[in-house]
Length: 246
Image (cartoon, rainbow, N blue to C red; front, side):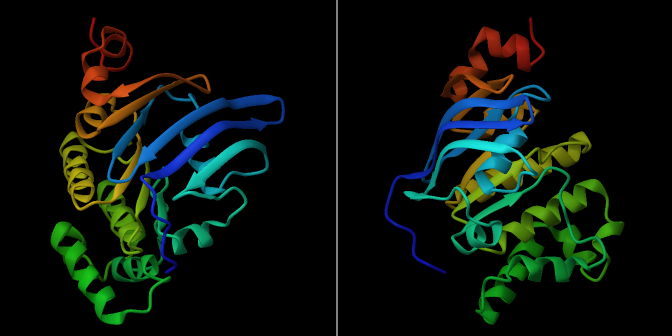
């Protein structure tokens, strides 16, 4: 894999706009993720969070995208998702996107398709089986037969097999049981502690802000608030709008 330029800013988004036909889904946002940070982007359904991640990774359907996106100091607008994985930027999409007709083990190996270090790949498979013992127990099982939580574990482990320096997570807790949500967030914190920079889009604002260093609030295609995560947890407006408190 190509060496990344030395910079503290892993991701820089400036003036990002996305329009589907006459609908402006993202209306000119700025955000920044520094090396080693866990940043969360919170907001209601339809705020534009997933569209923002897809615009960053170039995985949107036919639409008009404007603005500037830099990863590790280099512009990445127009790059393919294949290029980005080679540059150690990976995304776990909303809905998991596992290869349903492949086994768990095959899915993990697909996550390492940009690598050729067989011993290292085998070590990483063992590492993620250690963190996700359920996957190890079911390693020969087709991914499509797994529960939603198990598929989320697999999607995260598969993305991490590419050794990303920046990991984008889109709604990892969606549709999961409370116990599984807690488990997924434990893993998010573990991965962040290992030095992987993370941008997390999440509807569970409380858990997201408790895990994050900084947060952004997105409403109707605009960033309406940003700041340290703890300060946002304590902010009355955030508490009322996103934490269900009066």
